Image (cartoon, rainbow over all chains, first blue to last red; front, side, top):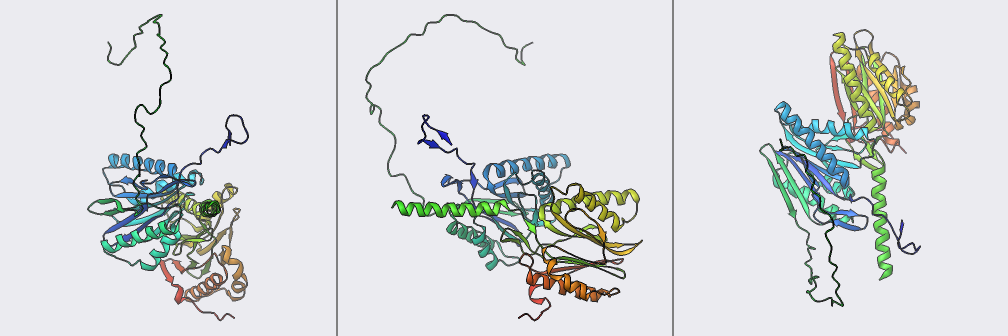
Length: 256
Length: 230
């Protein structure tokens, strides 16, 4: 706590790191993978970002949903994406999902759980469609359907009830959307809109937002003040006097 | 109005605390694993439950991990630790096997596990049963519990559910059982462990490792052997 004006009463707490208390889900269907996420990022009890993007790009055929500490999921997925791009350039191949998972596992295990990233990776590669989860301690699970985040319990309920193997696209999208919706309704830290990401062999359809929150409020009044609202009491002008001027030449790459 | 605000805020704190509770715990296999030697190979089995706290993170986990063509390990303890150790040993054993130009011994695999589990015993939580077949000594089971001891046993159980089946295993194991008898024995023992241990459950995964290779089976929840319980 930081005392304000040296007094005991006005103590302010330092803000905690922003967590994406969240609901994310993924489902493998007939032609690929559908990933879904809500869009609320909270800093304790305040909604810090109403339209946060939780589905991160890893490779043209691999996307990753992140739950946990927002900064950790962002940076981890960025690093993974860079690594896989370099690999693609070096080898001339599209990266495989299992490679992304192995790199993540290695990194998160090395940091012994200090990086709070709970990730769902989904993608389609030459070996098929895959959905993996990687935990902050470096554990990995490969499953056909999955939910993570603080809203995972209600989302998992919907998935366990309605998941079938080899669903078609509309069914899969509806299932993931309903699972995220259940998370939004039952978890305070999840909310606002639902994003979906459909990955197939042909390409990626990033639907942002797929379903908007019905509580989209518009500001009732303008908060700008007209010029002249604050009266000017008096005006003093201090002329600054030029005392001394020097010019220093810098070495630049272009100079000979 | 103030009262209502306080109630809402406290509830949110509880929800946040619940999330923290889940996020502090790592995924664990407090589990039931088992391995039995028979003439010509080994039978290994495990349940399929991974928990993070009180939530079952994966109800169809595969805890029987291949380390080499005819060597498997059954993993219990922390999911992350055992996956990392198994990956490291798979690499080391593969390298060793290529250098030797020969199939590795089960004892070598078990020694590699023991080396890692003992050296890093303070940081790791891993209880592993290494089982497989090699041409020199046939089917073998080595247990490497938490702490890094290694010992060879004809039958070995591990994980949190093992406590409940020591009596059953001790009274029902006979030397010289056939492959089918071993499979039935393992399935029944694991079922009893899953009945009584909250951290074990799901399906029973079995594998038979022998000179001919690996045969895997899954016994689903409703097909498990039934025991009369009061």
